[in-house]
Length: 62
Image 1 (cartoon, rainbow, N blue to C red):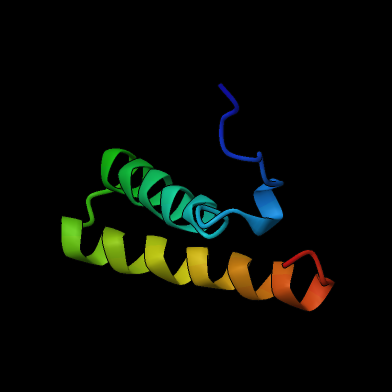
Image 2: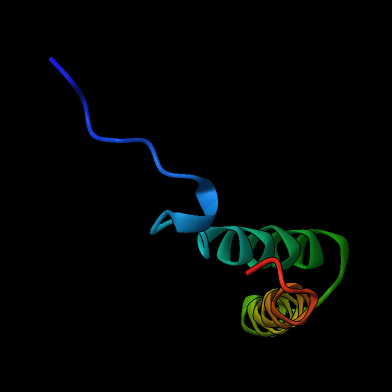
């Protein structure tokens, strides 16, 4: 039985999940290491995830 053809990560529908995961990890670290609240931490994590996305897009890897 042949399974579905494997795609590269670049062609995968999950290729943008790395930016969401990075943003959540950064938000968790900010919350844990600083007195900031969850909302502020999530905002900063989201901003850094978007910044990394734009960096990778400008670099041409996305």
